[in-house]
Amino acid sequence: QVQLVESGGGLVQAGGSLRLSCTASGRTFSNYAMGWFRQAPGKERESVAAISWSGGSIYYADSVKGRFTISRDNAKNTVYLQMNSLKTEDTAVYYCAATRAAQAMAVMTHQYAYNYWGQGTQVTVSS
Image: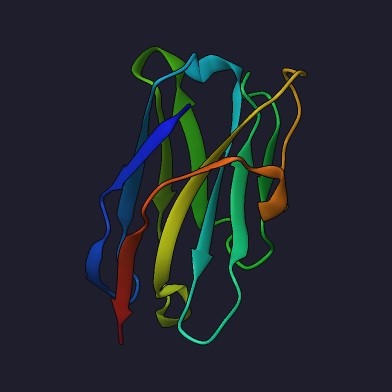
């Protein structure tokens, strides 16, 4: 079992930055591919970014490319999402997710590929 706890959400003005953190406990974090998802009111959950357990493969949704950066520190059991140049349309609850991966370079972009989820952290971007 893996427990995930997100932090770092909050209220920020458009153009500002936030860094989300997701700390895992319970199993060997380094064997888990990680992802960040978000869900805005009235919308479906969507993939934002994902990273392989080696850190060597990374995925970004087109809507966040060039603005968001996903990274991980396996020694700290933590994955990060640095969000810059935030827009009002980035407002959502952000979730991190984990799934055990057999391949070091495997990146999972679909929510159904993930077995473990955090409780979510609210990000609100004001105009």
